[in-house]
Image (cartoon, rainbow, N blue to C red; front, side, top):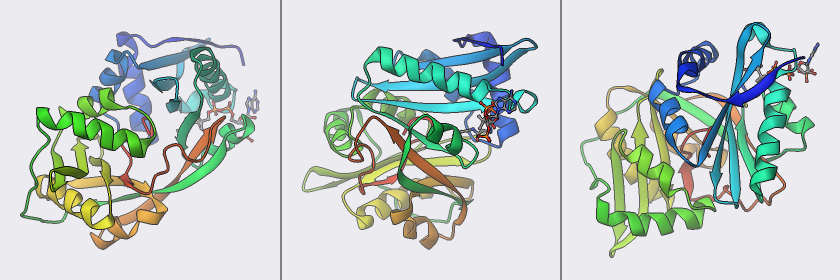
Length: 275
Ligand SMILES: CC(C)(COP(=O)(O)OP(=O)(O)OC[C@H]1O[C@@H](n2cnc3c(N)ncnc32)[C@H](O)[C@@H]1OP(=O)(O)O)[C@@H](O)C(=O)NCCC(=O)NCCS
């Protein structure tokens, strides 16, 4: 396939939003704008002879970890090598950046493409969705003075510093913070999506702490529809809330170790595109 890859421009946003809608994904125009605005995120567009054909994003969490997402090809351009072109471009960007590890969350459709490039399965995730049940009790929201503690708590579990992204999410919806004896034991966030509210990340020291954080977020989201992506090992939480399993997602890594980003303390990921 002849095609070229270039950085995404604001004028490409309607095209990118159409791709998300066609694929039934959940990211909003505001998410795309956040990707475009953040210094840590690079977003690219593939162009074929007939115009824009697909997108891909890369977020760099320092040199420790780069995360690939938003690999979307317009249905009329599929099976012509555009997905491979975009992925090859993203991998060369990661190499140039000096990333120690490259990760992504693959759909069943995307998984074969990544396997061909040497990615291997690190964990299976599950997407759960349904109506947010009713809860009355709310934990305190995250306040400015909490961020130093949260940054340390999260980096120890996520495996890299993603403070810029958490601060971005904080502005978009409800947050919840759990402390015990003054120490952070859990936090969570949610933000709007085009199909449903997206619950995540939820990071906590135990299942009990995670469920307290989730219930506080749900108190704000009831009765809206929600989506929750979690590791299979944590699926009893969304199941217990009456949500339904939609489909698997495959957490895949290249060049790195399995220790990155599969901590059991991550009860909800922040977005398949962002880890
Ligand atoms: C997954 C997705 C990105 C793949 O994009 P694509 O442009 O079709 O990918 P490619 O064309 O590079 O490769 C797809 C297949 O077409 C084949 N192909 C590529 N060029 C071809 C050509 N000229 N003629 C025939 N087949 C070709 C590839 O070998 C590959 O075959 P395989 O499926 O048997 O492995 C696309 O289907 C998509 O956007 N899906 C919806 C969103 C999604 O799930 N994204 C993945 C997120 S992880």
